Length: 205
Image (cartoon, rainbow, N blue to C red; front, side, top):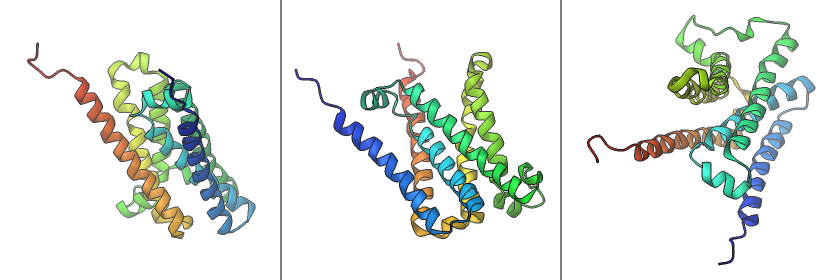
Protein backbone atom coordinates (compact mmCIF):
# COMPACT_ATOMS: atom_id res chain seq x y z
CA UNK A 1 0.00 0.00 0.00
CA UNK A 2 1.32 3.43 -0.95
CA UNK A 3 1.59 5.72 2.12
CA UNK A 4 -0.82 8.63 2.07
CA UNK A 5 0.95 11.89 1.24
CA UNK A 6 0.35 14.28 4.15
CA UNK A 7 1.94 17.27 2.41
CA UNK A 8 -1.41 18.62 1.17
CA UNK A 9 -3.25 18.63 4.54
CA UNK A 10 -0.06 19.90 6.23
CA UNK A 11 0.10 22.81 3.80
CA UNK A 12 -3.62 23.48 4.26
CA UNK A 13 -3.34 23.57 8.07
CA UNK A 14 -0.24 25.77 8.14
CA UNK A 15 -1.64 28.01 5.41
CA UNK A 16 -4.92 28.38 7.27
CA UNK A 17 -3.15 29.41 10.47
CA UNK A 18 -0.98 31.91 8.59
CA UNK A 19 -4.09 33.43 7.00
CA UNK A 20 -5.67 33.89 10.45
CA UNK A 21 -2.67 35.88 11.67
CA UNK A 22 -2.47 37.91 8.48
CA UNK A 23 -6.16 38.84 8.80
CA UNK A 24 -5.60 39.99 12.39
CA UNK A 25 -2.55 42.06 11.43
CA UNK A 26 -4.33 43.53 8.41
CA UNK A 27 -7.40 44.63 10.37
CA UNK A 28 -5.37 46.01 13.29
CA UNK A 29 -3.24 48.05 10.90
CA UNK A 30 -6.41 49.33 9.27
CA UNK A 31 -7.52 50.66 12.66
CA UNK A 32 -4.54 52.98 13.16
CA UNK A 33 -0.75 53.02 13.03
CA UNK A 34 0.28 54.64 16.31
CA UNK A 35 3.25 52.47 17.44
CA UNK A 36 2.11 52.03 21.05
CA UNK A 37 -1.43 51.28 19.97
CA UNK A 38 -0.23 48.71 17.43
CA UNK A 39 1.87 46.88 20.01
CA UNK A 40 -0.94 46.83 22.59
CA UNK A 41 -3.63 45.73 20.15
CA UNK A 42 -1.56 43.23 18.20
CA UNK A 43 -0.27 41.62 21.39
CA UNK A 44 -3.82 41.24 22.67
CA UNK A 45 -5.34 39.79 19.52
CA UNK A 46 -2.46 37.59 18.40
CA UNK A 47 -1.99 36.38 21.97
CA UNK A 48 -5.65 35.44 22.31
CA UNK A 49 -5.62 33.80 18.88
CA UNK A 50 -2.53 31.75 19.75
CA UNK A 51 -4.04 30.56 23.02
CA UNK A 52 -7.25 29.68 21.21
CA UNK A 53 -5.30 27.61 18.69
CA UNK A 54 -3.38 25.86 21.48
CA UNK A 55 -6.63 25.01 23.29
CA UNK A 56 -8.31 23.77 20.11
CA UNK A 57 -5.57 21.18 19.58
CA UNK A 58 -6.45 19.09 22.62
CA UNK A 59 -8.89 16.63 20.97
CA UNK A 60 -6.51 16.01 18.04
CA UNK A 61 -3.43 14.37 19.52
CA UNK A 62 -3.08 11.75 16.79
CA UNK A 63 -4.03 14.08 13.95
CA UNK A 64 -1.48 16.73 15.00
CA UNK A 65 1.34 14.22 14.73
CA UNK A 66 0.08 12.73 11.48
CA UNK A 67 -0.46 16.04 9.72
CA UNK A 68 2.36 18.21 11.10
CA UNK A 69 4.89 15.46 11.74
CA UNK A 70 5.62 16.57 15.30
CA UNK A 71 4.42 15.19 18.65
CA UNK A 72 1.27 16.86 19.97
CA UNK A 73 2.95 18.15 23.13
CA UNK A 74 5.78 19.77 21.17
CA UNK A 75 3.30 21.74 19.04
CA UNK A 76 0.87 22.45 21.89
CA UNK A 77 3.50 23.67 24.34
CA UNK A 78 5.19 25.94 21.81
CA UNK A 79 1.87 27.49 20.84
CA UNK A 80 0.90 27.92 24.49
CA UNK A 81 4.24 29.55 25.32
CA UNK A 82 3.96 31.95 22.38
CA UNK A 83 0.42 32.82 23.43
CA UNK A 84 1.51 33.39 27.01
CA UNK A 85 4.28 35.77 25.95
CA UNK A 86 2.03 37.73 23.58
CA UNK A 87 -0.92 38.01 25.95
CA UNK A 88 1.43 39.17 28.73
CA UNK A 89 2.91 41.82 26.43
CA UNK A 90 -0.56 43.36 26.08
CA UNK A 91 -1.03 44.64 29.68
CA UNK A 92 2.70 45.21 30.15
CA UNK A 93 2.89 47.53 27.14
CA UNK A 94 -0.35 49.27 28.18
CA UNK A 95 0.96 49.76 31.73
CA UNK A 96 4.20 51.21 30.39
CA UNK A 97 2.37 53.57 28.09
CA UNK A 98 0.02 54.84 30.81
CA UNK A 99 2.54 54.65 33.66
CA UNK A 100 0.16 52.57 35.78
CA UNK A 101 0.78 49.35 37.71
CA UNK A 102 -2.81 48.81 38.84
CA UNK A 103 -3.79 47.45 35.42
CA UNK A 104 -2.94 43.94 36.64
CA UNK A 105 -5.32 44.05 39.61
CA UNK A 106 -8.80 42.55 39.02
CA UNK A 107 -11.66 45.00 39.43
CA UNK A 108 -14.35 43.78 41.84
CA UNK A 109 -16.38 46.91 42.64
CA UNK A 110 -19.22 45.65 40.42
CA UNK A 111 -20.04 42.75 38.12
CA UNK A 112 -20.06 45.06 35.08
CA UNK A 113 -16.64 46.46 35.98
CA UNK A 114 -15.28 42.95 36.52
CA UNK A 115 -16.42 41.81 33.07
CA UNK A 116 -15.22 45.01 31.42
CA UNK A 117 -11.75 44.34 32.85
CA UNK A 118 -11.98 40.56 32.61
CA UNK A 119 -8.59 40.37 30.93
CA UNK A 120 -6.96 40.96 34.33
CA UNK A 121 -8.19 37.80 36.07
CA UNK A 122 -7.83 35.97 32.75
CA UNK A 123 -4.09 36.62 32.81
CA UNK A 124 -3.74 35.10 36.28
CA UNK A 125 -5.77 32.06 35.24
CA UNK A 126 -3.55 31.59 32.20
CA UNK A 127 -0.46 31.51 34.40
CA UNK A 128 -2.12 29.13 36.88
CA UNK A 129 -3.11 26.81 34.05
CA UNK A 130 0.39 26.90 32.60
CA UNK A 131 1.98 26.20 36.00
CA UNK A 132 -0.37 23.25 36.48
CA UNK A 133 0.95 21.72 33.26
CA UNK A 134 4.55 22.32 34.30
CA UNK A 135 4.08 20.75 37.76
CA UNK A 136 1.57 18.07 36.82
CA UNK A 137 3.83 15.37 38.26
CA UNK A 138 3.57 16.94 41.71
CA UNK A 139 -0.11 17.82 41.46
CA UNK A 140 -1.26 14.33 40.49
CA UNK A 141 -4.79 14.15 39.12
CA UNK A 142 -5.45 17.68 40.29
CA UNK A 143 -3.40 19.15 37.47
CA UNK A 144 -6.15 18.66 34.88
CA UNK A 145 -8.81 20.85 36.58
CA UNK A 146 -6.16 23.50 37.23
CA UNK A 147 -4.98 23.35 33.61
CA UNK A 148 -8.62 23.64 32.54
CA UNK A 149 -8.62 27.17 33.94
CA UNK A 150 -7.20 28.13 30.56
CA UNK A 151 -10.63 27.61 29.01
CA UNK A 152 -12.17 30.01 31.52
CA UNK A 153 -9.34 32.46 30.82
CA UNK A 154 -10.09 32.37 27.09
CA UNK A 155 -13.77 33.03 27.81
CA UNK A 156 -12.90 35.98 30.07
CA UNK A 157 -10.43 37.30 27.52
CA UNK A 158 -13.10 37.14 24.83
CA UNK A 159 -15.59 38.99 27.04
CA UNK A 160 -12.96 41.64 27.75
CA UNK A 161 -12.18 41.99 24.04
CA UNK A 162 -15.85 42.44 23.18
CA UNK A 163 -16.60 44.96 25.92
CA UNK A 164 -13.42 47.03 25.95
CA UNK A 165 -11.38 46.19 22.86
CA UNK A 166 -11.87 48.80 20.15
CA UNK A 167 -10.81 46.38 17.42
CA UNK A 168 -13.88 44.18 17.83
CA UNK A 169 -16.00 46.94 16.35
CA UNK A 170 -14.50 45.57 13.15
CA UNK A 171 -16.93 42.88 11.97
CA UNK A 172 -14.14 40.66 10.62
CA UNK A 173 -12.19 40.67 13.87
CA UNK A 174 -15.38 40.29 15.89
CA UNK A 175 -16.38 37.21 13.90
CA UNK A 176 -12.87 35.76 14.07
CA UNK A 177 -12.35 36.20 17.82
CA UNK A 178 -15.80 35.02 18.84
CA UNK A 179 -15.85 32.23 16.27
CA UNK A 180 -12.53 30.90 17.51
CA UNK A 181 -13.80 30.94 21.09
CA UNK A 182 -16.83 28.90 20.02
CA UNK A 183 -14.44 26.41 18.42
CA UNK A 184 -12.45 26.28 21.67
CA UNK A 185 -15.64 25.40 23.55
CA UNK A 186 -16.43 22.74 20.96
CA UNK A 187 -12.92 21.32 21.40
CA UNK A 188 -13.41 21.31 25.19
CA UNK A 189 -16.65 19.34 24.89
CA UNK A 190 -15.10 16.98 22.34
CA UNK A 191 -12.16 16.25 24.65
CA UNK A 192 -14.49 15.52 27.57
CA UNK A 193 -16.53 13.20 25.35
CA UNK A 194 -13.37 11.37 24.30
CA UNK A 195 -12.36 10.81 27.92
CA UNK A 196 -15.82 9.63 28.88
CA UNK A 197 -15.91 7.21 25.94
CA UNK A 198 -12.47 5.87 26.88
CA UNK A 199 -13.48 5.28 30.52
CA UNK A 200 -14.94 1.79 31.09
CA UNK A 201 -18.51 1.90 32.36
CA UNK A 202 -19.08 0.84 35.95
CA UNK A 203 -19.97 -2.83 36.26
CA UNK A 204 -18.51 -3.92 32.92
CA UNK A 205 -16.25 -6.92 32.88
